[in-house]
Image (tube, rainbow, N blue to C red; front, side):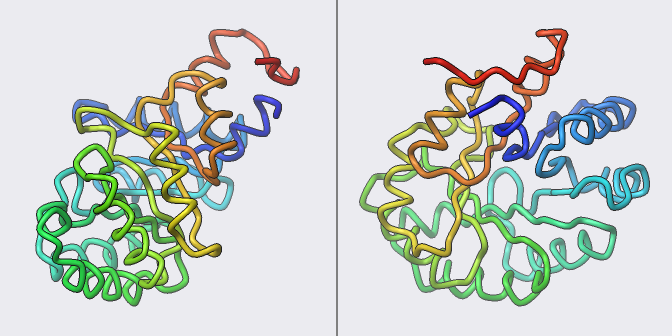
Length: 226
């Protein structure tokens, strides 16, 4: 794949708590320049980012982030409000405590409510794979698929690790064919990105790849050779 093709699969991400809007705005411009799939940013920046980007770039934001232990009513309100503010895509964190406790019915109920609240917009469910055993991850994949969410997403980027190839492989094995996969967290090179895509990822969450393009000093179009 070319670097340009990979960037079109990226949610370019700035979720640092100390990021000022001037930095958000500059990264929105870069995401538009490189035709990224979306710009993923904190809820407080959604309205201004959408005004800046209009229809030129999808705006993605996060719900129940990064811990996932908000109650369902709060997550649903957050999701609806962010769509009203201009968000095109919602990345919501599951209740990880419920997951490790085997409370799959409770998670599914919450995700169904989120799906109803976000109908017409893209919904991605963050499952924080670093916190889950393989057996729990496999069950959660089935829950996310049944909920009707558009994507299952590996990580917030705020845990002890982000995505690994094996996470993505398990997701592709267990999720329904129509459930897409977003690999996020720790993707620091185009080689990393291509490995995630080869394992089954349809979307990538990363802050690093656009920076690498800038460091290259050119719009590289050469195919990767690894």
